[in-house]
Image (cartoon, rainbow, N blue to C red; front, side):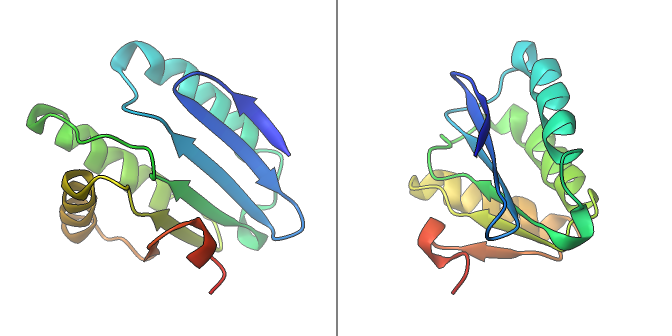
Length: 123
């Protein structure tokens, strides 16, 4: 069930699989960040975090400018601390964005896992 469907991001709750999916298109700009966080909070408040997986579908994420990498790092750290049963990051299709995500996850205490694509989530 899609909960939020905006130009830059989508949020969905898959009750059957007990998953919350966040999909970002391109890059969340500072101007979009406040509404993104409000939508995220409202979405995750609808589920029991200890029973659900949190899936960050970065398939359509574009490479970020180097000055934005610290914000990407903070965002991934934030996701990790939300208290979900498991955090899964789906690799971006862009090779440059993949490297950026991998580097960010190596620098933080990321206890989740990386999936090659959305169909790999439950593999």
